[in-house]
Image (cartoon, rainbow, N blue to C red; front, side, top):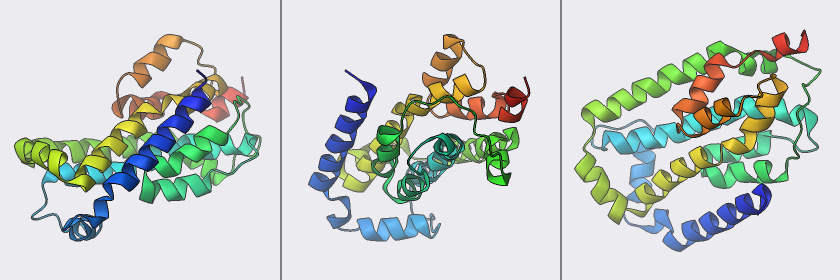
Length: 215
């Protein structure tokens, strides 16, 4: 089964599942969402707050692939990037599905590309993520989180959304590695099999496109 078919199925099933659960129709979830957005976390389980925050980190990770990739595509990345910040993997997947495999290095390396290509971009995201994880580990209530995951549709869905953002990451990794002259499949699997932190480590250590273009 091709990657595109798998991604389409993931998108359709998760859209249907989200509509079925209708998380914001459950009492109290609109208030919870408002607190998360406004950073009013005093009475919110830190684990839930961190998962919600990581759903903002993931689009920033994907941006460093998509906005480089879309220079060689017939479709633009920004609509999926913007919608992924609000709708998670549902907003992200259309770009991953519609893009075509392409390993060309974009000719126009403007300031945006230079920022997204910079290792400092990956380091900054890694520091933010490490801080969030530390907060969840030190202050989080795992028993309460498990109970809410089982009973609260919003918490249930953002947790699944986070897992899916991790799972579909290989769809953008292969072409980016090829652009940078990374042919070792061990790197691909090492990055893929370590959720989130594998992607962050890759951003911190991948060769620059500028270096690859000059070789």
